[in-house]
Amino acid sequence: MGWLLFVLLLVAGSATAAEVTETVSFFESGVIPQLKLEIRDEQQQDLRDDPRDYTRCTVIENDTTTFKSVGIKLKGAAGSYQDFDDRPGLTLNFRKYKKGQRWHGMEKVHLNNLVQDVSFLSEWLGTQVFRAAGYPAPLTGHVRLWINDRGMGIYVLREGFDSGFLKREFGDNNGNLYDRGEEGDIDSELEMDSGDDPDDRSDLIGLALACHQRDQAVRLQQLADRAEMNRFLSFMALERLCGHWDGYTYNTNNYRLYFPKKPPQGVFLPHGMDQLFQDPGAGLYDSSASLVSQVVLQSDHWRERYQERLKELSGVLSPAEKWLEMIDQRRDKLQPILETIDPDQAAAHRDRVDELKERIQQRFQNLEGLINDGMPSALEFDESGSQLLTDWYPVAEGEDVAVDEVDQAGVPCYCVSREEFGDFAGSWRQRVWLSRGQYRFEARVKTDSVIPIPDDQGRGAGVRRSETRVLQDLTGTSPWQTVSLEFEVREDLRDIELILELRARMGTAWFDRESLQLKKLSTTKSPP
Image (cartoon, rainbow, N blue to C red; front, side, top):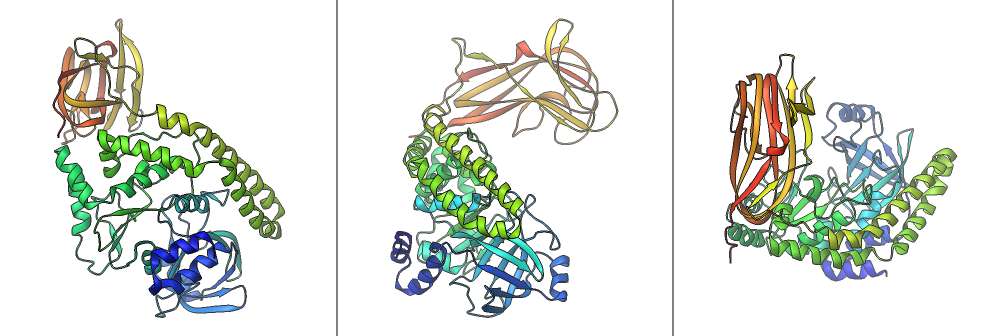
């Protein structure tokens, strides 16, 4: 019995021991089964017309074992989704139409189409890393797939977040499991995959409300009551160590959220890890739109705890040679199958795996410096409490929007302009980390022939934060004048995006580059 199986048996308890043994033994064996899906013409049309709804198919494993009346539907988000007649990602639900039917102890499995992972190994590697760190993640392998007479080649096989997975990892499967689906963060109307009371979303609502509390002390306490924060620190550290740029903590995407009955604290689960280790220099402290990640990065206490967890879990990735050897072993299992399918595909796969290994080695070499040197720090101010902000970046929304650096009668400027009539927006932006306190942002602005957009998102030219609309509403033709925006930072540390913007139907706005001052007006006390 392997070490992973032994640990999982202890977690799951005797009630699910047989189920755990069958599932884990199957994945630990490293076998790559052949799966043939027989789908009748009527069911094929179902998958074309309603790809997200289940229909029936027959599954044949290794030409010897047949499973009838298996639920099948298409899966995948914008980057990986393909139609049934292309190379679809698939979900198989063995008990959807036949109660008690399982495949190697599993009710549900996913067949990922690898359209975003030319190495075939990213998702498999990600789950190996999470599990080696003791974090709950689905077991993952590979299959060779046929759909009727179509040879589909290699697919990733991933265990579903079904009752067996939940029992094994949490000891119960009665809590609420939420799926990000087509929504977004935890304050969206997430789909509930399972739970005893699907109409009771008080756990998810409570977690979202905690993150939106304005008072930091209240926010931190309520969040600790509603999320398993020690586990979240591990989740965040592992996603970022692996460069999972399309996951929750970077991009508010690809996650599941489970609330066990006891304790009823949310646990985030990794998902969609088909694009790991793409950027060896990916930041570990980069700001994030995800609510729980923001709380961690904005609190001195949780940010320091997060850095500690990064140091601890970076040891899971060391030495790199251990992981490179595992990759080679898995590659060697896939290569004979690929040679049978197409020798050119096998050769290309070897090259892609070598590229993945090179990026992983570079990532591991960078991690120590990223962990120790990359901790965000607050912007420093001079003795007068001011700081000139430089190095802004442009954003254009709409056609024929000019966003340029220009000289306006001897004044160096950031300029936004559009000569043709039509709704547009253009801006110059900068993100700064600020400590607790009161601030004022100032800029000198000049406009020419600005016709505003009559909407509630702001009219004309002005300055703002990303959370607010344009406040000054400079329109028409106006001489140089100073506009300002005052705001408060209530957190220990927070990244703020400041914006110089023109929203209009035509016209030009200039922003004096040497006038872009941020002033700290006062410092407020941290909560006890």
